[in-house]
Image (cartoon, rainbow, N blue to C red):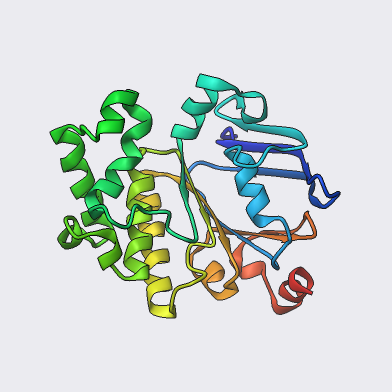
Length: 247
Protein backbone atom coordinates (compact mmCIF):
# COMPACT_ATOMS: atom_id res chain seq x y z
CA UNK A 1 0.00 0.00 0.00
CA UNK A 2 1.32 3.44 -0.96
CA UNK A 3 2.30 5.69 1.95
CA UNK A 4 0.06 8.79 2.16
CA UNK A 5 1.78 12.06 1.27
CA UNK A 6 -0.12 13.70 4.15
CA UNK A 7 -1.46 12.01 7.26
CA UNK A 8 -3.56 13.86 9.86
CA UNK A 9 -4.12 12.21 13.24
CA UNK A 10 -6.31 13.48 16.11
CA UNK A 11 -6.02 17.08 14.87
CA UNK A 12 -7.82 19.58 17.05
CA UNK A 13 -8.07 23.35 17.22
CA UNK A 14 -9.69 25.30 20.02
CA UNK A 15 -9.59 29.09 19.71
CA UNK A 16 -8.98 31.32 22.78
CA UNK A 17 -12.70 32.15 23.03
CA UNK A 18 -13.46 28.43 23.46
CA UNK A 19 -14.65 27.80 19.89
CA UNK A 20 -13.86 24.22 18.87
CA UNK A 21 -12.98 24.55 15.19
CA UNK A 22 -11.61 21.01 14.72
CA UNK A 23 -12.36 17.96 16.85
CA UNK A 24 -9.99 14.95 16.54
CA UNK A 25 -9.82 15.02 12.73
CA UNK A 26 -8.32 11.93 11.07
CA UNK A 27 -7.49 12.11 7.35
CA UNK A 28 -5.00 10.67 4.86
CA UNK A 29 -4.22 12.12 1.44
CA UNK A 30 -2.56 10.31 -1.46
CA UNK A 31 -0.10 11.79 -3.95
CA UNK A 32 -1.92 13.37 -6.88
CA UNK A 33 -5.41 13.35 -5.31
CA UNK A 34 -7.68 16.29 -6.09
CA UNK A 35 -9.80 16.73 -2.95
CA UNK A 36 -12.57 19.23 -2.31
CA UNK A 37 -13.51 20.12 1.26
CA UNK A 38 -17.09 21.32 1.64
CA UNK A 39 -19.25 22.51 4.52
CA UNK A 40 -21.07 25.56 5.85
CA UNK A 41 -19.32 28.73 6.97
CA UNK A 42 -17.67 28.19 10.33
CA UNK A 43 -17.50 24.40 9.90
CA UNK A 44 -13.69 24.35 10.18
CA UNK A 45 -12.67 24.09 6.52
CA UNK A 46 -10.28 27.06 6.50
CA UNK A 47 -8.90 26.14 9.91
CA UNK A 48 -8.13 22.65 8.62
CA UNK A 49 -5.98 23.71 5.68
CA UNK A 50 -4.39 26.58 7.61
CA UNK A 51 -3.34 24.15 10.35
CA UNK A 52 -1.60 22.05 7.70
CA UNK A 53 0.85 24.84 6.82
CA UNK A 54 0.77 26.33 10.34
CA UNK A 55 -0.87 29.62 9.42
CA UNK A 56 -3.05 28.51 12.33
CA UNK A 57 -1.43 26.72 15.26
CA UNK A 58 -3.12 23.39 16.05
CA UNK A 59 -4.15 22.70 19.62
CA UNK A 60 -3.24 19.03 19.36
CA UNK A 61 -2.63 16.10 17.05
CA UNK A 62 -0.15 15.23 14.33
CA UNK A 63 0.22 16.31 10.69
CA UNK A 64 2.76 14.03 9.01
CA UNK A 65 4.10 15.28 5.68
CA UNK A 66 6.85 13.20 4.05
CA UNK A 67 7.61 11.58 7.42
CA UNK A 68 7.94 14.92 9.25
CA UNK A 69 5.45 16.21 11.83
CA UNK A 70 4.48 19.72 10.74
CA UNK A 71 3.04 20.45 14.19
CA UNK A 72 6.48 20.02 15.78
CA UNK A 73 8.48 21.77 13.03
CA UNK A 74 10.26 25.01 13.86
CA UNK A 75 12.52 27.52 12.13
CA UNK A 76 14.33 26.25 9.04
CA UNK A 77 12.52 22.91 9.04
CA UNK A 78 9.13 24.65 8.97
CA UNK A 79 10.28 26.97 6.17
CA UNK A 80 11.43 23.97 4.12
CA UNK A 81 8.05 22.28 4.62
CA UNK A 82 6.09 25.41 3.68
CA UNK A 83 8.16 25.71 0.52
CA UNK A 84 6.62 22.43 -0.65
CA UNK A 85 3.03 23.51 0.10
CA UNK A 86 1.58 26.10 -2.28
CA UNK A 87 -1.29 28.26 -1.06
CA UNK A 88 -4.03 29.96 -3.09
CA UNK A 89 -6.19 32.51 -1.28
CA UNK A 90 -9.73 33.72 -1.91
CA UNK A 91 -8.53 37.34 -2.19
CA UNK A 92 -5.69 36.45 -4.61
CA UNK A 93 -3.02 38.13 -2.38
CA UNK A 94 -1.22 39.55 -5.41
CA UNK A 95 0.94 42.67 -5.53
CA UNK A 96 -1.55 44.53 -7.69
CA UNK A 97 0.86 47.23 -8.93
CA UNK A 98 3.44 44.65 -10.06
CA UNK A 99 3.55 42.82 -13.36
CA UNK A 100 1.85 39.45 -13.57
CA UNK A 101 5.14 37.65 -14.14
CA UNK A 102 6.71 39.26 -11.07
CA UNK A 103 3.83 37.98 -8.96
CA UNK A 104 4.47 34.48 -10.27
CA UNK A 105 8.18 34.82 -9.53
CA UNK A 106 7.34 35.51 -5.88
CA UNK A 107 6.70 31.77 -5.66
CA UNK A 108 10.47 31.35 -6.02
CA UNK A 109 11.36 33.45 -2.98
CA UNK A 110 11.62 30.40 -0.71
CA UNK A 111 14.49 29.15 -2.88
CA UNK A 112 16.45 32.43 -2.90
CA UNK A 113 18.67 34.15 -0.37
CA UNK A 114 17.07 37.12 1.35
CA UNK A 115 19.16 39.78 -0.44
CA UNK A 116 18.43 38.60 -3.99
CA UNK A 117 14.79 37.94 -3.07
CA UNK A 118 14.37 41.38 -1.54
CA UNK A 119 15.89 43.06 -4.61
CA UNK A 120 13.89 40.91 -7.01
CA UNK A 121 17.01 39.58 -8.74
CA UNK A 122 15.48 36.60 -10.50
CA UNK A 123 17.52 34.46 -12.90
CA UNK A 124 16.79 34.19 -16.61
CA UNK A 125 15.87 30.55 -16.05
CA UNK A 126 13.34 31.50 -13.35
CA UNK A 127 11.76 34.10 -15.66
CA UNK A 128 11.50 31.56 -18.48
CA UNK A 129 9.95 29.03 -16.07
CA UNK A 130 7.42 31.63 -14.90
CA UNK A 131 6.39 32.39 -18.48
CA UNK A 132 5.99 28.66 -19.08
CA UNK A 133 3.73 28.33 -16.04
CA UNK A 134 1.63 31.30 -17.16
CA UNK A 135 1.20 29.60 -20.52
CA UNK A 136 -0.08 26.49 -18.72
CA UNK A 137 -2.85 28.53 -17.05
CA UNK A 138 -3.74 30.39 -20.25
CA UNK A 139 -2.09 33.72 -19.35
CA UNK A 140 1.08 33.85 -21.47
CA UNK A 141 -0.15 37.01 -23.21
CA UNK A 142 -0.80 38.72 -19.85
CA UNK A 143 2.72 38.19 -18.46
CA UNK A 144 3.80 41.83 -18.55
CA UNK A 145 0.51 43.47 -17.62
CA UNK A 146 0.01 44.82 -14.12
CA UNK A 147 -1.94 42.40 -11.95
CA UNK A 148 -4.66 44.99 -11.30
CA UNK A 149 -5.37 45.13 -15.05
CA UNK A 150 -6.55 41.52 -15.01
CA UNK A 151 -10.04 40.21 -14.27
CA UNK A 152 -10.78 38.46 -10.99
CA UNK A 153 -10.62 35.04 -12.61
CA UNK A 154 -7.33 35.86 -14.32
CA UNK A 155 -5.88 37.09 -11.04
CA UNK A 156 -6.80 33.81 -9.39
CA UNK A 157 -5.07 31.93 -12.21
CA UNK A 158 -1.98 34.04 -11.47
CA UNK A 159 -2.37 32.77 -7.90
CA UNK A 160 -2.29 29.20 -9.26
CA UNK A 161 0.83 30.02 -11.29
CA UNK A 162 2.55 31.55 -8.27
CA UNK A 163 1.83 28.41 -6.24
CA UNK A 164 3.16 26.27 -9.10
CA UNK A 165 6.38 28.31 -9.16
CA UNK A 166 7.17 26.86 -5.72
CA UNK A 167 7.41 23.40 -7.32
CA UNK A 168 5.07 22.12 -4.58
CA UNK A 169 4.01 18.62 -3.61
CA UNK A 170 0.70 19.94 -2.27
CA UNK A 171 -1.43 22.92 -3.29
CA UNK A 172 -4.11 24.18 -0.90
CA UNK A 173 -6.78 26.60 -2.05
CA UNK A 174 -9.03 28.43 0.42
CA UNK A 175 -12.32 29.34 -1.31
CA UNK A 176 -10.55 30.16 -4.60
CA UNK A 177 -13.77 30.81 -6.55
CA UNK A 178 -15.95 32.37 -3.85
CA UNK A 179 -16.08 35.82 -5.46
CA UNK A 180 -16.07 34.76 -9.13
CA UNK A 181 -18.83 34.38 -11.71
CA UNK A 182 -19.69 30.85 -12.90
CA UNK A 183 -17.60 31.03 -16.12
CA UNK A 184 -14.50 32.35 -14.31
CA UNK A 185 -15.03 29.79 -11.55
CA UNK A 186 -15.07 26.97 -14.08
CA UNK A 187 -11.89 28.29 -15.74
CA UNK A 188 -10.05 28.50 -12.41
CA UNK A 189 -11.08 24.99 -11.37
CA UNK A 190 -10.28 23.53 -14.78
CA UNK A 191 -6.77 25.01 -14.87
CA UNK A 192 -6.10 24.08 -11.25
CA UNK A 193 -7.16 20.47 -11.87
CA UNK A 194 -5.13 20.36 -15.11
CA UNK A 195 -1.79 21.50 -13.68
CA UNK A 196 -2.16 19.35 -10.55
CA UNK A 197 -2.92 16.27 -12.64
CA UNK A 198 -0.04 16.94 -15.02
CA UNK A 199 2.50 17.33 -12.20
CA UNK A 200 1.11 14.76 -9.75
CA UNK A 201 0.35 17.43 -7.14
CA UNK A 202 -2.06 16.74 -4.31
CA UNK A 203 -4.74 19.46 -4.15
CA UNK A 204 -6.91 20.36 -1.16
CA UNK A 205 -9.58 22.87 -2.18
CA UNK A 206 -12.12 24.47 0.15
CA UNK A 207 -15.38 25.10 -1.69
CA UNK A 208 -18.92 26.21 -0.97
CA UNK A 209 -20.07 25.21 -4.46
CA UNK A 210 -21.09 21.54 -4.21
CA UNK A 211 -21.65 21.28 -7.96
CA UNK A 212 -18.04 22.28 -8.70
CA UNK A 213 -16.78 19.90 -6.02
CA UNK A 214 -18.67 17.03 -7.66
CA UNK A 215 -17.49 17.98 -11.16
CA UNK A 216 -13.76 18.39 -10.52
CA UNK A 217 -12.84 16.27 -7.50
CA UNK A 218 -11.51 12.75 -7.12
CA UNK A 219 -12.73 12.83 -3.52
CA UNK A 220 -14.94 15.06 -1.38
CA UNK A 221 -14.65 15.64 2.35
CA UNK A 222 -17.62 17.12 4.23
CA UNK A 223 -16.95 19.10 7.43
CA UNK A 224 -19.62 20.02 9.97
CA UNK A 225 -18.94 21.66 13.33
CA UNK A 226 -15.31 20.58 13.30
CA UNK A 227 -16.06 16.93 12.51
CA UNK A 228 -15.56 14.97 9.28
CA UNK A 229 -19.07 13.79 8.39
CA UNK A 230 -18.44 12.64 4.81
CA UNK A 231 -15.37 11.28 3.02
CA UNK A 232 -15.94 9.62 -0.30
CA UNK A 233 -16.32 9.78 -4.06
CA UNK A 234 -18.35 12.58 -5.70
CA UNK A 235 -20.83 9.95 -6.92
CA UNK A 236 -21.51 8.98 -3.28
CA UNK A 237 -22.50 12.51 -2.27
CA UNK A 238 -26.28 12.35 -2.63
CA UNK A 239 -28.80 15.04 -1.73
CA UNK A 240 -29.48 13.51 1.68
CA UNK A 241 -25.79 13.58 2.65
CA UNK A 242 -25.35 17.12 1.28
CA UNK A 243 -28.30 18.20 3.44
CA UNK A 244 -26.71 16.54 6.47
CA UNK A 245 -23.41 18.41 5.86
CA UNK A 246 -25.07 21.81 5.46
CA UNK A 247 -28.02 21.52 7.84
